[in-house]
Image (cartoon, rainbow, N blue to C red):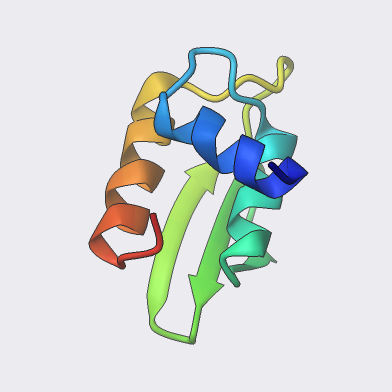
Length: 81
């Protein structure tokens, strides 16, 4: 199993300790491009039509569960997961 496959399998379990860097890697794998907004807001766009908006967590780099569920729902809806 490759590193990316392990990351996807981990994401599907919706872990409480999923990090911002892991999310960036996951979204990059699926072809999302990061666009920096004001402050900690980050947008991820795929094929110039699918948009995911997240706030970068700070000072800790652990995502909130609602952020993980939001991204999970979008990736499932787009048939990427």
